[in-house]
Amino acid sequence: MEPKIIASRMDILGEGPTWDSRHRKIHWVDIKGQKYHSMDIDSGEIHTFNSIGMISSIVPTNSNYLAATVDHGYYLIDSEGRHTLISRVGESSDGCRFNDGKADPFGNYVAGTMDMNETKPLGALYGLKGKSAKIMLLNLTISNGLAWDTKKGLFYHIDTPRRRVDAYSYSSSMDLERAGVAAEFRNLPGSPDGMAIDAEGRLWVAHWGGGRISVFDPDSGRIVDTILFPATNITSCTFAGDDLSELFVTSASAGANGDMGGSVFLVHTGITGGKTYEFHVS
Image: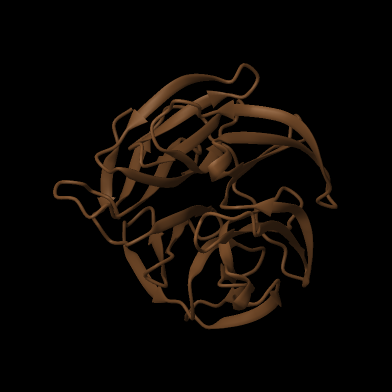
């Protein structure tokens, strides 16, 4: 599987790609650039919008809005880029900001926060249902990748400094019960960042600082495939397209000559990916 560059060095910290099947678009964010992008996958046309702060994740909804996490809040965003606050989960004085987030299979918006200094377990995982947010996990340092296996009733989550993917049982009320470790990074290059899941339940985990995506079988913990990229900081990925076989991959700038960090890549996987869910706007 060879990656192809479809948007070259656009971002400082490209993150959170998501597939909007309703509008046939890929959306992703540039956290440090405080902007987000929407790309029509048929024409390749990209539109870029400014955010009102550090936008860290973006998801499709069951309406014409997008939903996003910005700084400490959940927002709805209309087609002109106007932001409307839904809910806040903290204040900037706590030294945290939102990081990765996705909609779950039940229409909730699940997103985690991280310590801005990336050293202390100050973050939490939150779940938003309608306009009400609840705490799902505490003591996280860099809340990152999320994925759901609906066949097994499992939720997978990454807290980057722990260098593993944790598994939890999951319900529509967003209650979690620990179910073990799905993947260990141990001596692998870089650190685990964002991830996606395919139709067979394999986890596609981006390596920040490792220039690759590793595909894990969570039942055995083994790596079953690896995709290498001409960028050091691979941040996240999502499956898209009519058969969900196209993997769109984001990255962050590494500041090195020849490094294609900040680009968006496309990988034709030849397999069926997992579904992207929508946040239900109440």
